Image 1: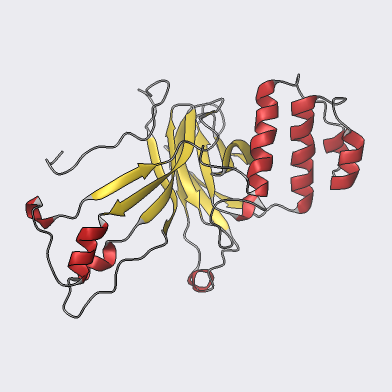
Image 2: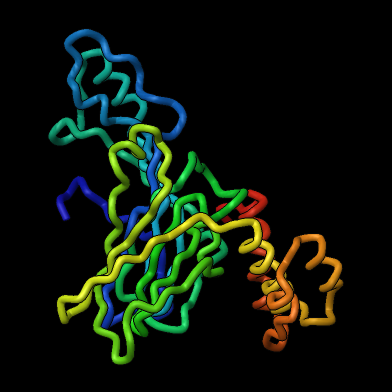
Amino acid sequence: PPPNVAATRVLIFAQSSQVHPVIAMEVMSSDLPGATATRSAGASDVTRYLRPITSLLFLASGRECATLEIASIPDARSVNMLGKGGSVVGVPGGLVSTSIKCSSPRHGMTTLSSPIVAAAPLPPTRAVSRGGGNLSSGPLVALLTVDGLVHVRSPFCVAVPLASIEVGTRPNDFFTLSSLHPSPAEENHAIVRSRNVVATSYGGEARLVSVRVETPQDFADRLIKLSIDAFGSNGFPRVELAEALGATFSATSYAGPEPTAHKRSLLKQYLESVLGLATDN
């Protein structure tokens, strides 16, 4: 890299993927509080771009994936000088130094059952900052795995799938995933009612996947199933919780696998994300 550019290590995967591509995708981005100083007349237009920015990133390699936040913070003294019409002195090329701050992966690393070959971001249906509430109405990530499944997950709790749709049969030849932009009318009102991704195959076939916001019934059924996975059918007041949530009979009758500490961790992660209690650590 150029002498004035330094690489910042943000994540280490357990195993390097030599077959499937490494994925680095921005899910959402927003300005941090504290905009640049007001520019004086005649100041360079470049100062409008010198502001703190934070991005929520999705990273994947093979079967592993994680989400984390990266903040880019320009040097405040240099920005102030430029805002007043001055210049950055003592720096080669007059460049403004920028510090990079990276959070820990949200809930650590997640391992899927199949390698991830493609990913696409989906915009929120409302203004979202750090999770909480109905996860399906916030920003989402769609993941295409080598077995031909498209997984829809929340970046605030990527370990728990919200939906899985099969687009390719075995052997699967679907290899790309692209999100469709919302209509101009939806963008103007800052509300996205429909979210779609397109999966494309080597044979020239394409399939459209529409992602809807889940209903309270969907949430109730998922929560009761996660609870059964975590504690077993008889390890908690299953019937009482199902009645309180309004879960369906089929979800309440779900047998589930043998409960494990990992399943209890998934339930904890999901509840923290829904309640907006999750932290970057």
